[in-house]
Length: 124
Image: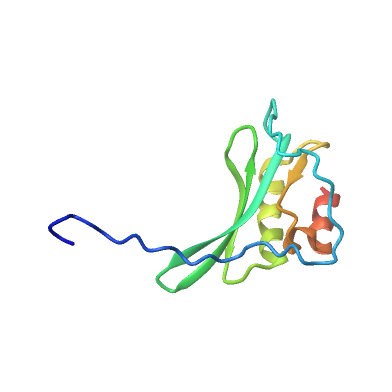
């Protein structure tokens, strides 16, 4: 293999970050995959991912402004929980203070549909 300069490409293990099998209320998809904001703080997109560290996996909840493409809120933790996504949302709301009418788009996983998360959204 060395003579031919061949290398193996290892496949990363897939980790699901969305649990679509829940009985929580789901918000309508207002964007329908059409992301065309004309100013900051009109559309926020939220998601969860995982990051390998020397101490194991960490989960990252992030919220990105659809216009500026800047991360407006984030939180890291050892578990994918509604508290983790709530911390990211709280950071975004505190730092940006968005106007009424903000569209918050997520994958509708259980963390984003949880009652606590929806209360934070409704109170802002």
